[in-house]
Image (cartoon, rainbow, N blue to C red; front, side, top):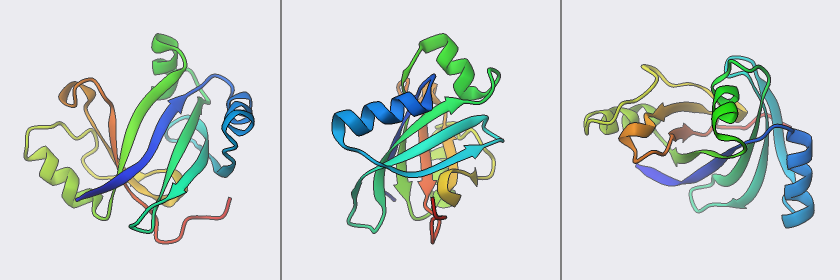
Length: 145
């Protein structure tokens, strides 16, 4: 069962400048940063608030580290802006399978490791009214930033 909006992914060309905009404009601070070599991105997670299920909601700022990454290609085609929405779940495997059973294409056969040690998968945007959708099960203990 999906329990919350885990994060909104925003593609950007300059991570440091974008982080500074969100800090200066809204007061959001960086909770965690990392480079995900597999996905070809450098990212910053800005924590917005805690949630009733013990998780949190974030803005995930994504700067491609290479042009051929999914975010790099998306950014070249669409420019900066909202890239995807992610819903939190306690069981990414079970929820992905249930959604697959409803005819929605799940992009990974098995969930992969995502930000802060989470387990993730994506749903095809053409099956989700044009929205790239991510399912996220948070790590038991997120790594220190």
